[in-house]
Length: 184
Image (cartoon, rainbow, N blue to C red; front, side, top):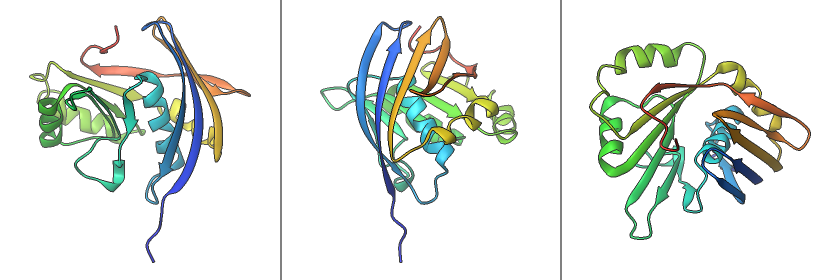
């Protein structure tokens, strides 16, 4: 019997003073059977960091052809490809060729640094690529926020990111490894 995704609802309020973007998004998020709770919450954080009215979750882990999130333009061209993990060079080349901007969020304790050490000389030609590492301590604070119905807030000011629920909010530790944030 095939395992099915578990559906979560999130009301995500974004106050991004750095981009002058303020909105509340009502999101439906599917937790893939092979996905951890932390990773699903990282997808919500990635949504908040790149919030836009045209940003959407994709089939994600259910499709090898799509990133975790993308922003499509009205003419169906790909504006922003957002992916979690450690994609290989071929996938990065594909993403950078398809989208105007590409953002990769790496996470985990040791593996991302090993991945980055092998990739950093290979990605220098991609001017539309932005690679960000999520601090393992910040990642660990996300899973406890997960509920079937969530009310989440994200506040961004002067490069500082606060993410959480109505009960608790934590400062997120993110380090840019490559590229310039498309928002600054």
